[in-house]
Length: 33
Image 1 (cartoon, rainbow, N blue to C red):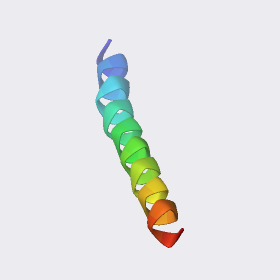
Image 2: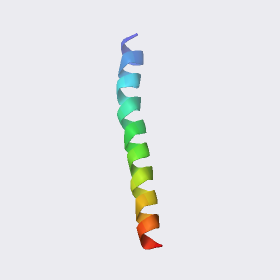
Image 3: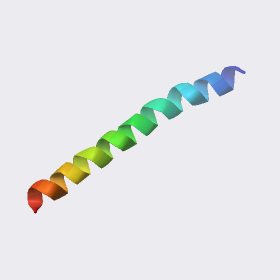
Image 4: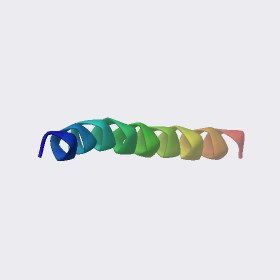
C-alpha cells in the first residue's frame, strides 16, 4: 500500500512534466513556422 502511494505521488509530477514539455515543444514549432 505504501509503495502504491509513492508510485502515484511520483507518476503524477512526471506526467505533468511530460505534458508541459509537449506544450512547450508545440509552441516552439509554431513560433518557428
